[in-house]
Image (tube, rainbow over all chains, first blue to last red; front, side, top):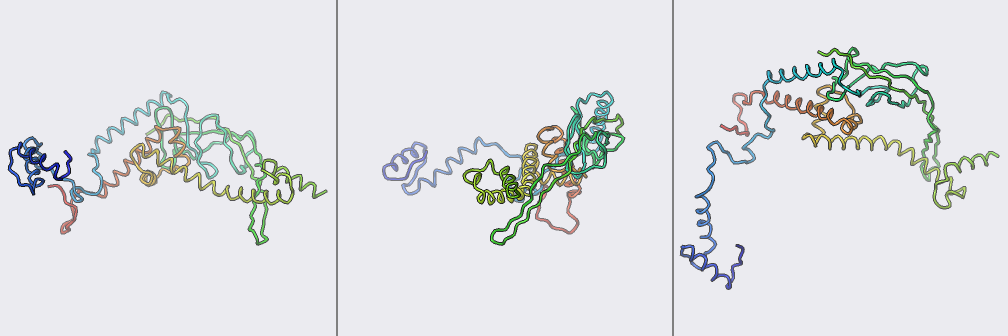
Length: 207
Length: 135
């Protein structure tokens, strides 16, 4: 109960303390309030276990608590996961596959029937087939295979065809410094190739 | 004749400008020069902005899974998984389960590293440490 300590309230406070059964002086009502309340609380408080250490800056190490680690349990779990994924691959229940492929200095997330625009020239004729070899990741409906860093050629196969070889629209590269009579203008036309990803296959052989 | 061709070429760039820049030759020349310079600078800045966007998206996605972006990237590198930020961002948006698998991999590698660093949990003999172990 929040009450200010002035003349009007003092008599009210004293009456409250007298009903509590303690004898007080006018000058120290606040000091005697604490032991009565503390005594009342401790009678029904929860007892802490003997190993309890209150949380201070040095009571716990600064690194987080790690979960318990059982290597055999981990091995069993990993084996079960590998078996399940092998089963899914053998039965072919993966739906539409997507792959992350490294090509022309960039990584592409790719599925079947995808079109890719590459900003450089490839020495392959139009209509010829290409196999993209650097596959970093393959995923299906219920599993993903993550390569470290690449997945083997006997595991994944990504096939594409070159559809067209064009040039980009003429981009203007201009540099200008004001009050210095400096300006340079260059028109850049990049060669481009368009690839269509035909198929992504997983071959059923995983260890 | 040559001047007419140049003016014609300029008109192609200027049709969507506002005010007298799209009608008067002198003003149009200056406006087109500024437009070309802005476009050139923006093509460079686009690469930087896209990378920051990817990084912030990947950070948000990793925090949904209870990890932080630097931890994810460092541990994926330690596992020799060389996926770049653009692909990680795409995976976090379109392939949430694959991204969850990647965060789990990074977390496992992080905990393995911490366990290897902690070792037995005992101090070397003769070393007095501030870290008090619960007895």
